[in-house]
Length: 159
Image (tube, rainbow, N blue to C red; front, side, top):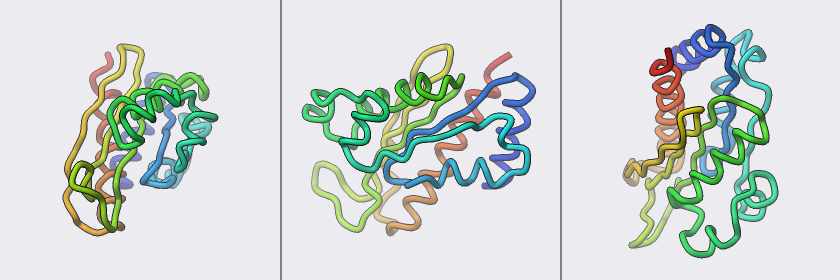
């Protein structure tokens, strides 16, 4: 993941952009991957670990109604997380991650389901990825890598 983070750092620096993240099931792993790279303070000022629904609402402005209607593991919540993080951090790129790392899950929200959103100047995109019941550590690692790839993709698609 360090190669991904290095690519993000170089591209964001070239653009003069900052990056932030709003993390739930990854618990700060995206922020850690980005800040493991020397010089990351040029593009990363702060991120948000909002594990509890109350934190999502308080820190990121996720609407309680959205949480009640869709649940924390939903693209709707991830989209509001990304938008809130981008605004709160005054960043040009924000990625949000909310999922079921495991163990467990349910028939409707199985272990390994992770919802992502990416907010950028062009708008917000979201997606749900079924990573599968890989185990807690592996789901978190897969989600972290996927989030970093989303950031890199958004930066690379910017002229």
